[in-house]
Image (cartoon, rainbow, N blue to C red; front, side, top):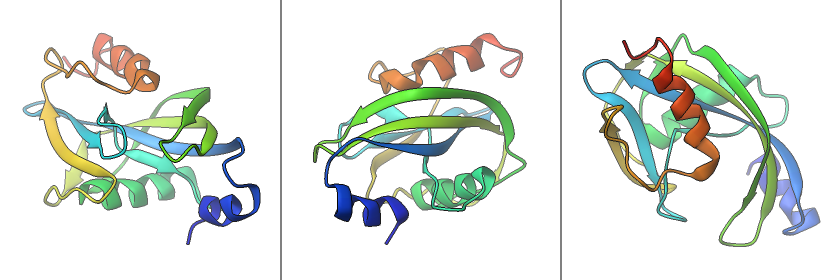
Length: 149
C-alpha cells in the first residue's frame, strides 16, 4: 500500500494535499515522451505522488520506472507549480504541488503500467490536443526555452 491509499481509508474522498514529482523526458531525435492516462484518456508527462518521507528525485525515478519501464538518471529541476486541483474518476480529490524535472538520460524499453493505456514520443511541434490542462504550461515553457534547440 501507499501513503495516500492508507490516508484514503481514513478520509475517504475528501480533499488532501500531496507533493508530486514529474518529468519531461526529452530526446532530440524522438521528442517528448507522453503517456495516455487510463482513467481519463488525456496525455501527460510521467510522474506521480511522493510517498511519505521520500525525496523528490527518488520518487521521480520510482514513478517513471513504474509508468514507463525506463530507468532515468540526472533529472534537472525545471519548475514547480502549486495548487493543482484534481478530482479523479472515483471522486478522490487532491491538491498537488508538482516538482517538474527535465530528463534527457534514460535507458530501458518502454512498457506501460495499468495507469497508462499508451506511451508515445511526440515531436515538440506535433503534440496531441488532449494534454492534461494542468500540464500544458510546463510543456509550453519547455518548448519555448533553449532545451529543444
